[in-house]
Length: 203
Ligand SMILES: [Zn+2]
Ligand SMILES: [Zn+2]
Image 1: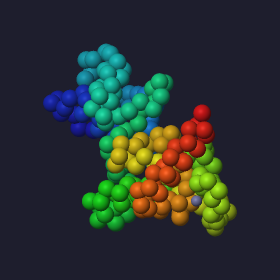
Image 2: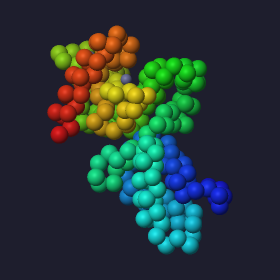
Image 3: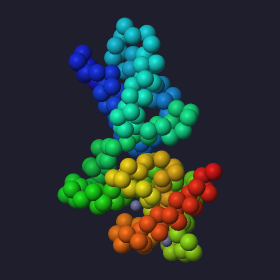
């Protein structure tokens, strides 16, 4: 990484966080992992600063004040906010760029691109592979025998929702489209149902 002395700690850390999330394909990360992965880069930014770890923590706090990060818990887990599309997600499919001007479609595409990335693992581990909609039995198996399921952000990223467990859910293809493209009444009823289920499953 080229280091120009005029770069502030804050933008340096912000870039490094984005870079970190892009590499992991996941917007949630721990301070511990961030520091150990990038200790050399972090120390070489201002080599005379012996308290670089405190500096990192402080800058993450500043990024949180700017609403660019949020605390996922009290144990040093952070979530990158207000950064809609990670580099790989765009490269996955050029259609993303064409539709990116329509926020809802863009959100939907981000989820689609991310299907085989970190979010899916996180959501499947906690919510299983059956649609969370009340009484839904829509299901089919993929060629490898595993069940087809889609991961959905209950509060869309464009409305300030986060890439964290409590904002993830699993839905069948039909209910997932409903969650994005139905009339408002239907959408909000579905959202309430999901929020209730998630609260009971993530306790
Ligand atoms: Zn969705
Ligand atoms: Zn369903």
